[in-house]
Image 1 (spheres, rainbow, N blue to C red):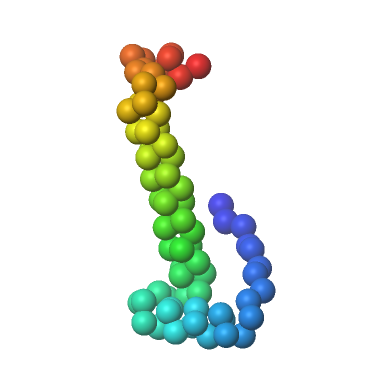
Image 2: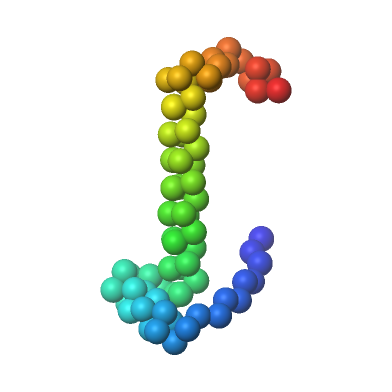
Length: 71
């Protein structure tokens, strides 16, 4: 299922997105923004992973022995 999201961009940014669509091989602006959001989500997950690594390194993390330990 998909939902429609409308965004408003300044003319210059809209031009940059159009150029990126053509140069980046995207079929549509929607495809460009979906890719952008996937990249953003991946960066967020990497930040969380890095934070977890720091906690574990500083002996603040805990080792989970089973899925039950998540609770």
